[in-house]
Amino acid sequence: MKGICILGATGSIGVSTLDVVNRHPDQYKVIALTANNNVDVLYQQCLAFHPEYAVVVGEDKAAILKAKLADSPVADIQVLSGVKALEQVATLTNVDVVMAAIVGAAGLLPTLAAAKAGKTVLLANKEALVMSGDIFMQAVAESGATLLPIDSEHNAIFQCMPAGYVAGQTAKQARRILLTASGGPFRETPLEQLPTVTPAQAIAHPKWEMGKKISVDSATMMNKGLELIEACLLFNMAPDAIQVVIHKQSIIHSMVDYVDGSVLAQMGNPDMRTPIAHAMAYPERFDSGVAPLDIFAVRQMDFEQANLERFPCLRLAYQAIRAGGIMPTILNAANEIAVEAFLNEQVRFTDIAVIIEKTMAGFSAEKADTLEKVLAADQQARKVANQIIAGLS
Ligand code: NAD
Ligand code: MG
Image (cartoon, rainbow, N blue to C red):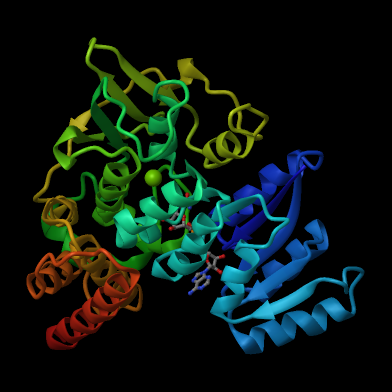
C-alpha cells in the first residue's frame, strides 16, 4: 500500500489522478490533498477519499473547508493553510508518492521539497522543472528520489527508453527525440485572424481537456516550448536533438529514434489517465479506465513541421534553452504573466509572444546555480513583463 499526496488535487490532473486511485484502493491510500481556493471540489474529494490532511492555500477558504468538514462524517481530517503547508504534506513520512499537479511556478517549492525528501515524484507541473532546471535534477539525484514524468509526451519518451532507464541519464543509443504536438486550436487559423482570437477560443483544445493556463499554452505552442526544455532536462539531451512534430491526431505521444534506425513510439487514446496510471503502477502496469485504442478508427496519422512564424513562442523556447542559465526561468515567468493578462482580456493573443520576447531581451543568461538566483530571476521577470504590458495599453 502506497501513501499518496496530490498537490493540485482539484485541477484537471488532480481529478484524473483520483479517478485512477479510485480504481486501486488496495494499492493507494490518499494521505493529503491540496488546492489553491476551490473548497467545494476539495470538500467532495475529502468525503470520497478521507485523507489525513487537506490543504487550502488561502486562509479564509481554509476556514470555510474546516467548518464544512466539522459537520461531516470525515471531521478528523486536518485542514492546513498557507504555502508552507504544501511543503509539509509533500514530505510527510507516510507519503511515498507525490503527484506534482499544481500549475505554474507556485508548484516549485513543494515539488522540490518532495524531491529533496526522496519521494517518488510524479511530475505534471512542468513549469517547476523548467524554471529550476539543473537544481531540480540535482536534488533528485542527491536524494535518490524517483522522478516519473506525467506530461504525456515525456511519459511516452520514458516508456520508449531502454529498460532500467532513470530520468536525468543520457540514453547513449538514442540519437533523437521526436516530440509530438497536436498543434492546438489555431494550427490552421489564418495568421491575420490570430490577433483577435478570444480566450474562449484559445482554451477550446481539439484533443485534450485541461486547465486554462496549459490550454492557452497549447494554443501558442509555448506548451511545446516548455516541453522541449522539460525534455532536455529529463532526458539529458541537447535542444538540437529534439525535433517537434505536429501530429494532429494525438495518438502517438512521442518517439525515440535510436542509432540502429529503430524509432519507438508510444500510442494510446489522448487521456491523461494513461500516463498517470503508468507512473502510479511503475514498473508494473494497472488499469487506468482508458478505453482501448481503436486503431481502425484512427485510420491515418499525419506529421508536419511546426511553423515558427505561426508559433513564435516555440522559437523563444529554443532560444531560452540554448542560452541556458536563468533564461528558461525568465521565459516561464514572462509567459505566466502574459497568459494571465490574455485570459483577463488585457492583451491580445499575439501579444503573448511579444511580451515574452521583450522580457527576455532585458536579461542575460546568468548562471542559475542556486534556488535564490532562480527565485529572484522569476520575480524580476514578472515585474518586467508587467511593465511591458502596462506599456502596451
Ligand atoms: P488546473 O488549472 O486544472 O489545476 C491546477 C491545480 O493547482 C488546482 O488544483 C489548483 O487549486 C492548484 N493551484 C493553482 N494555483 C495554485 C497556487 N498558487 N498555489 C497552490 N495551488 C495552486 O491545471 P492542470 O491542467 O491540472 O495542470 C496542472 C499541471 O500539470 C500544469 O503544470 C500543466 O502544465 C501540467 N499538465 C497538465 C496536463 C493536462 O492534461 N491537464 C497535461 C500535461 C501536463
Ligand atoms: Mg504534454
